[in-house]
Image (tube, rainbow over all chains, first blue to last red; front, side, top):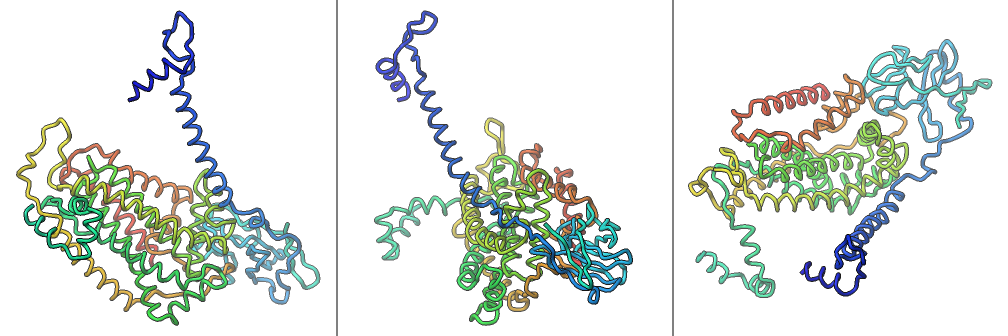
Amino acid sequence: MPDGLQQTTSESDVPTVPDANRGAEEPAVPRRGFLKFLLSFSVVSSIAMTITPIVGFLAPSKAANAGAGGKVLAGTLDTLPVGKGAVVAVGSKPAIVVNTAGGVKAFSAICTHLGCIVLWDEAASNIVCPCHDGRFSPATGAVLSGPPPAPLPQLTTVVEGNDIFIVTG
Amino acid sequence: MATDTRREERLWGPLEWAESRLHLGPFIAALLHVRIPRDAKTFYLGGITLFLFVIQVITGTLLALYYSPTPGSAYESVLAITSDVEFGWLIRSIHHWAANLMIISLVLHMLRIFLQAAYKFPRELTWIVGGGMFGITILFGFTGYLLPWDQRAYWATTVGTEIAGAVPLIGQPLLLLLRGGPDVTEATLSRFFGIHVLVLPLMLAGLTALHLLFVHQQGLANPKRPEPRPGRPGPDLTTEKTKPFFPDYVLDELIAWYAVMAAIVILASLFPAGLEAKADPLLTPEHIKPEWYFLGIYELLKYVPRDVGIIGPMVLVGIIILLPLLDRNQEVRPRRRPIALACAFVLLVGLGYLTILGGR
């Protein structure tokens, strides 16, 4: 059947090339190849046409990525005297605020190892992750021990009167 | 054959009615009336895994009738299923235990195939498809774990997606895709619910059909001799002792299913699925642990750099799935495959040790 088709094609519809180097019955337009190309193009473009909106749909919206901006009240010097620390919400993100001898410090409370929320270990005077016991310095956020690969990102704090604010954005 | 003909003649009325229109008899006979090697010892593990998947589909569908996939109501709906809905605790506990047993039976099934070298020629594709089914089953566990929206669920998912996010090159887009944003939120819950109840069941059902088709086409492997290759001299198969798949093997399999069902009901009754405090995105509970089948990797991440702890297991899984293409030894008897068996032994002992360490 394919042979028959080939013959019909070359004999009837397709113009031939009067070139001595090529067979007189060879089609100038490789119709079968062209149709295969069209078919492949249709298949690829159909797949792309289907996948593109799906991937776009699945990608989170920009609103979901937007963080909170501005100045957020994180506590007071009464609730957080020197030597104390607490986890507070800053927008949708958790932060840990520690009142150290060197001043009030704040860091992202998301452990850089596997995303658990760190805690203030008052007895050891450092920040600890409950998942794999990673420990961080309350002064700089640097890793003291354990598997975390990076320090906790530091946040800007402002003390106004008795209030402690974390500045974001 | 004469017996079969008589059986067809005595078909039950409605079946006779359907058969006279659909002519499915030869098709069903081709599926059932095959012979399997008497030496083949399957321990019914593949069939048990299939049975557990069916239980999951049934109990999962029932749970979905009451479950509400939003952070505001997911926890409360699971609480209501457990305490208010008639037999809700039982359905949920069966779903919980069948999930765990499904992973155990699947691992044992793969181990059996490995020990009997049934992944070798001509069953390479059956093993690879089975590897895909194992991956989907693990994803079932991972996505289903979040749905109760309790502390354990929330933090196991946070850590799990964080691990996915640390995969080189594709990590961050993968994390955003899984979570539906940078954090585990209601977007994550919706995605996990959709994946758990729609995407994964369809994928697993499709791969199961393919897997069974391959098994049917190739028959069960004989663990005592390699499969004869085309054009090469092989053993005389006419002397091989066989037994009928139906009813002999099917009956044994049914008995195994009943035993498994009894075990699930006992486990569900004695150790019903629990629920911890509602998820709190600001408080990671102390000594938080993932489900037991992730404990090994979770513990490994404590001792090795994060990239190593993530890429290592991925490479290992890749090697296991592609094992039939990597293992060129044609021998099937365990004592003639010392290297393969030693590797498996070291892997199992290592994983078991890490799991026990993680569980303490």
